[in-house]
Length: 199
Ligand SMILES: [Zn+2]
Image (cartoon, rainbow, N blue to C red; front, side, top):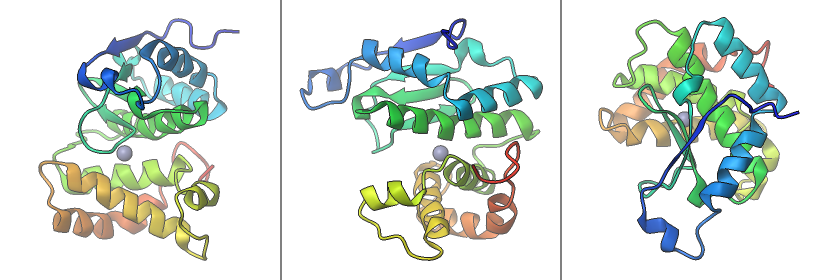
């Protein structure tokens, strides 16, 4: 039953925020929930496709961390793999969501030859895909964030979140992030691979 068996999850403690009584969950609980998330159907689907694409990345792919910087729920880097900001997590659903989003970045890193995260357009493309395909902009989540569901809102949400993430890239200014997202929008929004269409 334990689908997460064999996938190591590293705990990385950066200190400070553990002393905050309002911070999310303990790393122990977070690690358990990351392991649980590995049996989520979409996570399984992405894992299978990464294996198929020849990315033996599981060795270092998942980390339970405390995040001090920015207001993000997780992150991905070629060197460190996927990190989940445990101190910002409350529910299993949030953890599933972060892992799906970050795995799409990991998948892009594997699939796209010469993926250059310093290149704003490359980064923008992966953010558009990750926000679109993970369901981050599903209307229920948008309602919880206080945004009303209106026609076309999913796309606006994907755009808003993609720009926000690219703007944090030290190589991309806010203006460069906007330009990059606009420039690659049509191609990357419609590129749903490995999904047939946005799940
Ligand atoms: Zn992202």
